[in-house]
Amino acid sequence: MAARPPPRRSPRRPTSGRAPAAAPAPARSLAAPRAVARAPLARERSDGDFEVLLGAVRGEVEARLAGLLDTKVADARRLGADVEAMAAAVRDLTLRGGKRFRPALLVAAYRAVDGQAPLEPALDAGVALELLQTYLLVHDDWMDQDDMRRGGPAVHAMLTRHFGSRAAGEASGVLAGDWASALSLEAIARLDVPADRIARVVTMFAQIEQDAIFGQQLDLSGRPQDVELMNDLKTGSYTVRGPLMLGAALAGASPAVLGRFERFARPLGVAFQLRDDLLGAFGDPAQTGKPRGSDLRAGKRTLLVTEALARGTNADRRTLLDALGKRDAKDDEVERIVELYEKLGARRAVESRLDELVREALAALEGARLSKLGASWLRGAAEALSRRRA
Image (cartoon, rainbow, N blue to C red; front, side, top):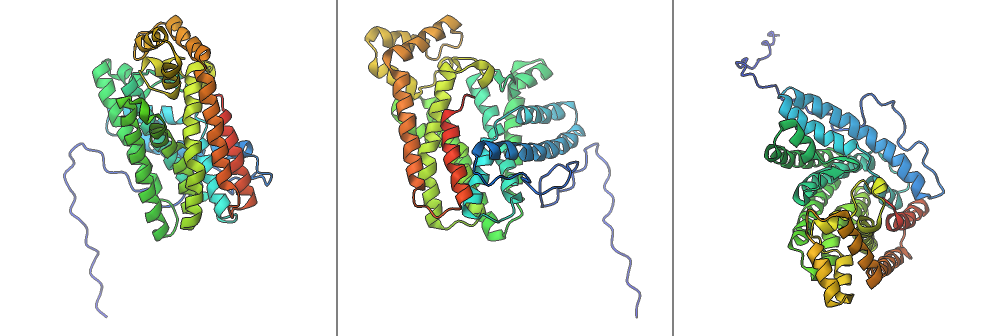
């Protein structure tokens, strides 16, 4: 038998000072390499307590995020201090707290559809959602000129300090958000599920991002008649509806079941944003991580603003409109508007609408053929999302 020829080797390319491309990560779990191997959610409880689920998912997803981002920042380091600073700022924001509601909702929907399937794909999809959230927060803070997020500096503020220039820091911040978006797409595309299912999920994930972008544009336009549509697109898309639909699709839900999830998620997503609006005006900054009145200073036409304008006198409307969008509004000016929301009944009207939306969401679950554990988690999620304090 003739001897095999030696294997062909590609000619060595001359070095150019550019770092070699990182080897692709294995298409399996995103768990941190240093993490001790264990069954996901080993303490998964059967009593359906959403807060218990939230705590368990938070730990699992943060371990995966930390492992993934540690590796990515190390790769970026080889390209120089500026690229590393951009990547490190994304890592810093992503791992700086965060309630991880989105991954928990995804897991609840996944388990509601299939009570026995391995949870690894759902947890790794939760990582993708958190990276998408990072991207949206980075760009949102830059557009609103908010220098604080989650109790620390926003990404563009961190990078402004690094470069010693506001313009360079903000430009790098835009790139940081773009990079987080690319990481989220990579994470969702690497899920270890059948090919036909991953194609469906990736398409759904892309639609979530598009909806959030359209909602942000409506927010920038500030047309009061679009408040609930804006809330559904900007926040509901990736905070409630997206996670629930992704979880159900990952578990192989039928079109009928997906329709049921959508009817549950849409009002709940709007309710989540209304709670955000209330927290922005009345919440404790120590819990929310943002100063009171940031929405007012940014000129956002929240439902609080719309209700106050509809209910107030001409003098009330002038007071509110003079403060709306005033970047340098003093704290006492903000407090005056907050008092106006109370006096005019705007706060009460928004809270009433929020309660109505939650009831509408819960009604969509009635009669649904879901696992008992998953359905209990979903009902608990509706309560937790609508009553949160941060």
